[in-house]
Length: 466
Image (cartoon, rainbow, N blue to C red; front, side):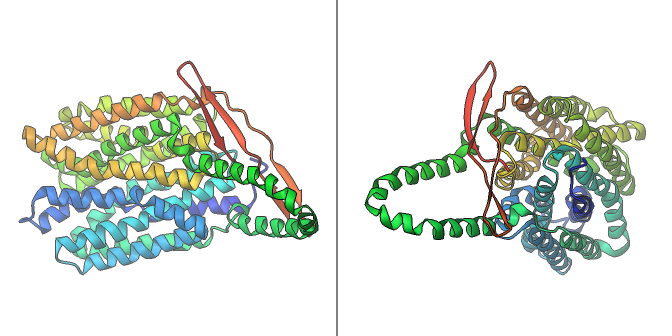
């Protein structure tokens, strides 16, 4: 890591802090129980939709964050996320109508967490191009710490200040991500369009005379480059929609988040059903945060030497098998064991997903690709709890909600195993550096044909990687 810029370590710390302060969706299960007590006359399914929508927004609206990053930079995205979280939770503390909570709590507060996650992940790819998995593993351990701290802390806020007071505290904590975002100095990739425009204007001035002399001849010659540019543009924009590994990753991500949202939303209530108190249930759930911290860092390093898709899929498969036996976990020891394994085997999912995505599509398309991947993740978060609720009502037993989660884990494992990006042959061309004569350098990246092949398929992608 000797080639990493010194400010990159500040970025790493800021990303860690942003993910820690703005990841209240890990406490959605605790808030779900408080909402059921606050609105006893409201259908439980409606409250489940409220919690699932809040949880899914961190992924469903990441594409908004990617748009802001493309228009401005990651710093603006993360700072805006803190403001949205503050506004959303503050308004929720004054709302009594559950219908309005769908706007203030689920949409506004949830969107703030989405943008924080998007900005932090993308800026890490800019600063740690060669060590993305390790950097994201360390940064996303902030989510693991949040998983440990926020459930019991949120339960304490609810017990002491009520649900309205808890919303205020969560909004204040989430706003701290704006401070972390202020430290995320824009990189050359975010300011690159202005440099490219400068180079193009310089080239235009130098070639004006030549263009005037050869005007008639250039009419024929311009047609082919324009057609090639149009073709390259379409290929670049639609590469995500024509890549089998990308679609496998999207499907795996959706299935995994259907399982994860179901477990985190229903597990505190199910532990109460098995004899635990509310505070004990929140504490048991927080154990997943501690083991999640270790797994994020450990698997981030492990993916440097082992096929990332193999690690990614095997963790989900193991977690799916364990989830099928949640009905037998009545003792305090078995409950702690399950949540510890839950954190360990699912904690590094975002690290591994992002590493796989960058391996497939390159860094330049990271923000767009990440937005699309998190959209599928958000759909999983949105649909998981309601479907699990339907399963529980259909069989008159909440254990079948976890059966549904186990099946989703297994689907995520099987599709993730099919990606196998590390065993594919990747052929990249080198970059071309052009000096504009005024002290600035422009990186004109050549198009890179990445050929991904194995026994099953051959896919040709047109990608520009920075």
